[in-house]
Figure 1 (tube, rainbow, N blue to C red):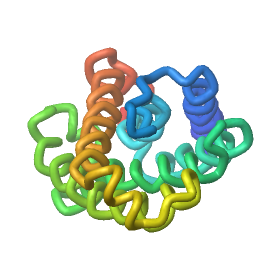
Figure 2: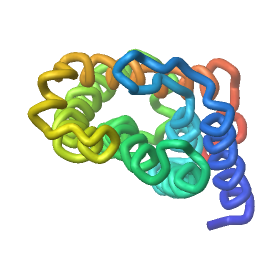
Figure 3: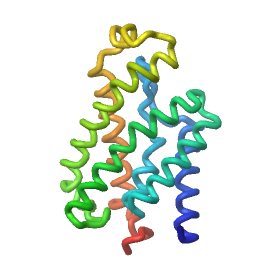
Length: 184
């Protein structure tokens, strides 16, 4: 990595950690937070590409593991839920032979984000039922399914995913952070 990339990755991971520490967001009755933690992870994709986004997201998740009340479990779930929001647009960009800056036209993000939300739900719903909720609450998967309908988990994750991409897109392309991108 170049020094400016390393510095930017550290700064974006630190912003992510600070947003977790301050916990800017809304707690839902189900225990799922709608927050801003992963916005910088998606922003890293728009500015520097997939590799940088993975570095920022892994570093951010590791930092969050150290001090978040949800410890490693919350960080792992946040990371797992956010990866489709980066990987699917990245795959679409590769297929279209465009740089992430090609998403400056928001309409180009509609299909990739919609597919990313479907993948996110397909991964996160069973992961919640059979892994996270039993560890966090002590419920069996059957109790988790009975108490938290799948559409609630999927819906809250859809809101979270759209928020992450929309805010990252706004910061990059409307607030002109793209002038600092690797594509300029």
